[in-house]
Length: 185
Image (cartoon, rainbow, N blue to C red; front, side):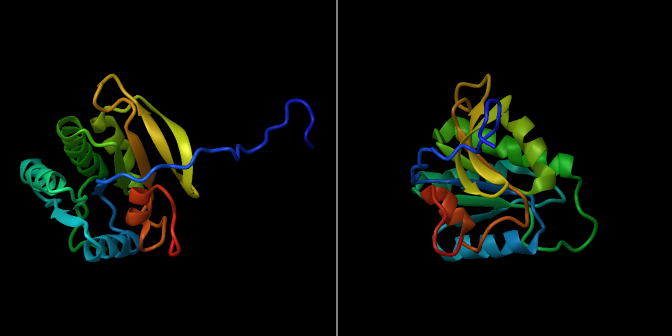
């Protein structure tokens, strides 16, 4: 214990800073994420539904851009809990959400994005243009705040948080915007 070659967890992380606007994109059908969306909408975030059947991204981009322009944080979501009917393929949902995120990061100079939904996250990351991520701060077990590496100048350096559907307290989206987990988290 503690000898040469032993691995010790890093504990000297710099605290994450709050951001004024946070973009959330969610492909999760989890009841936990549904509760987080409900909390966010009751606490100043703007809901932007994305129809999972059609995946028409232009209206979602326009609505999210309007919210960001007003200094608010949009939550683009494909579900608020269990869906009626067969689910859309994760690859299509994730690609649409990542495309929306990339368009908004490029046009709005966003510092941080939260991607909710374990099944859709890797597809969203590809569409967003991520080559790699580096952990910058612990936020929740299994869902750290990371810095993106990308060939896109707008995406390179972006802070991103990927969370599975069952991760986090009801105020999780607010905590990620604050850069620290709060009382509920």
